[in-house]
Image (cartoon, rainbow over all chains, first blue to last red; front, side, top):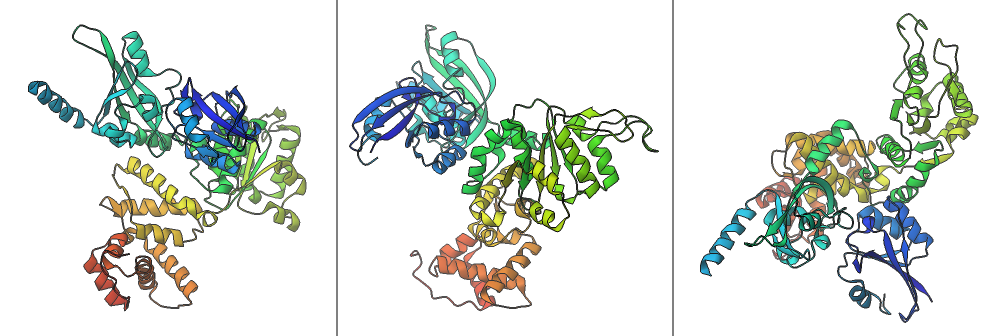
Length: 103
Length: 455
C-alpha cells in the first residue's frame, strides 16, 4: 500500500515551525519504505487550518515537522494525518530515521 | 587562563541574574550561550540549547523569513524591540520582544550575534482584555468537536454566509463569532447586540437607527447597528428572544439587504454579514410557533453547535491555565496553579453556567488566595455546596451538611487514588498531613494505611 509523507521544509532542513513552513517535500513510499515518488509542494496558506486542509487534500498520511501548535496538531489528527513533530536537522538525516517499515 | 575562566564565570553570573532572556550565536547561528531567563521563557535547558541552531530552539515566526539575529550579523546593525512569537518547549506560542546586535572580536571581525528577549504574555493578555480583541487562537480547547468546528471556521469566515451559532449560555458563542469576523476578509467592524437585553422598541432603534424627530427624545439622527456594521459583521445574540414583529423586520433585512431607520422615509442598504446566536433550540421554537420558519431558514445557512463544558471536560485544565494567566495579568498576582484536589473537584462539576461560570470561580479564587497555589479552601461556598449535592446524588446520600460531604468525598477519592498513602494524599490535596489526619477523624474516614512511599 502506498503512503505519502510530507516534510515541512526550511531549505535543506526540517522547518522549525509547521505554521511558518511554505514548502513541503512530499514523498510516496511503498509498505517496505521504497521511495516511489518525490516532489516539493508550495503551500502559501497564512492560516494553519487551511494549510492542514491542503495537506489532507494532497492525501498526506504522515507529517514530519519541527514545532507545531496544539490546534494544528489536533486538526491534523482529526483529518487522520499522523504527526511526527519536534524533529530537527537536515531532511536527509531525519528521513532516514523516520522512514522505516514500522512508520 | 585562570583569569579568563574567572571572567567567564563572572559574566555567566551577571547574565543569569538578568530577567530578560539572553543568548549568543556564532555566524552559523549555533547557540554559544544561553542564560537562565532564556531557559525559563523557552522551557529549554541550557545543556539542550548549547550547540543547536537558534531557529530549532526558539522556533520563532520570523526564523524562516526575516531572522533578526541573522540580519544583525549580515548588516552589522542592531534590531531593537521587535515583536515576534516563539514556540516554547511545550509547543505553546509565547509573544516576545527581541533585540539583536552583532558580536565582534578584538580586531572588529564579526564572530556572531547576541539577542535579548522578553516574555510579553502578561502585557498581551492585559491589552487583549482592555480592547476585548480575541482571535482564532483564543478559543481554548483540545476537544475533538471544537476542533472540527475550528477546522471549518476559515471557510465559514470567507464565505460571507449567514451563520447561526447554537450553544448554552457561557459557552463562548461570541468568541466564535469574533473569530469568524477576524478570519474573514471583511474590512468593517464587529458589532454585537444582545437581543434579549432590550425591550422591542429600543431594540428596533438600536438595530436600524432613527432619524431626528422620530420620537420625543430623538434630537438628531442616530446610526443603528446595521449601519455601524457596514462592510463588517453584526452579531445578534439571543436571537430566539426577539418579538414576532421584529422577526419580520429582520427577515426583510436578510432577504432584501435593506431597511428603514425609525422615522425615516429613505430605504438604507446594508451589506453587514449576520452572525446570530441562541441558547435555545430554534427548531423547537419554530415548531411551537414562537419563531418564524422563514426567518429560521434565512439564519440557518451555516449552523455551528457548541457543546456545553460538561460535554468537553478535557478542556477544563486548559481553561483553568488560561484564566490563571489572564487574572495574573489583570490582578498583578503570581498564582502558579491549582492543587490536584481543586482540579478533581472542578472536573467532577457539571458547570451549568459553562465557561463563564468556570471563569467566575477562578476569579473568586484569585481574590481570596494569597499564596502561589489555589487550594480547596479558596473555592466559593456555592460551588462546594453544588458539588456536594452532585456527589451525594451519585452516592445516594442525603445530608444536611453538604460542605462536609463534599470535602469527605474528595478525601476518600484521593485516598483511593493513592492506595491509602497519607503523605501523597495530603500533598495532592494541598494540605498538611496533620490536617488530613484531623479531617479523616472528623469525618469518620477509615482507610487502610499502606507503607508510606508506596502508591
